[in-house]
Length: 174
Image (cartoon, rainbow, N blue to C red; front, top):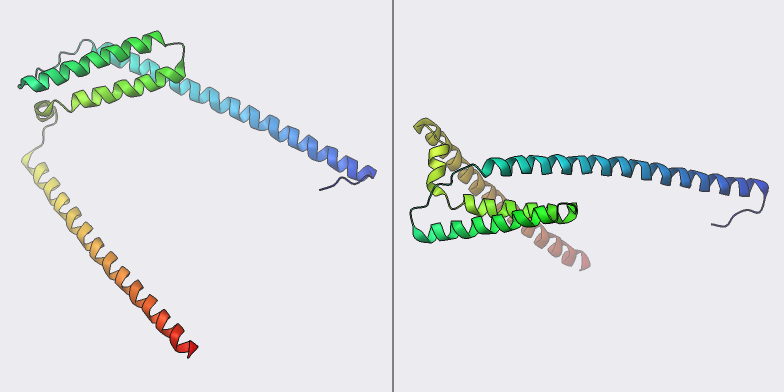
């Protein structure tokens, strides 16, 4: 787009540039506000993680029955301790600590997965709740099977429609 060399063309060009500068300025302000909000959320998450770590430090872990699980648990606890040290070391770098927090939470998840018996003690279900959950599970399986059958029928219908269109095209060409 060329600029008209008239006074009106120059004024319009300057107004467009002024509008663009205002939009850029507003976008920068919005971005700064959004970044500040995200930084506050990161700080809140870090504080919550620190509180959780402090609480977990006082928790006694259940010892596993088999020796290979105990070894795995000890390895995971050692890895958690190493990552925790790295988090303290790189505390001034939120980009690094965010990744380290994610890594540590993965180790905690792996550790939690080694405690099969603990879940039974913490989460208790009545027989009625178990029966209800089993019924819901069976219904969902049957529903998924019915959806698969409908999908197969729709796919067959589409294939038949394609065949019909090809035949119609051949017949129209004759």
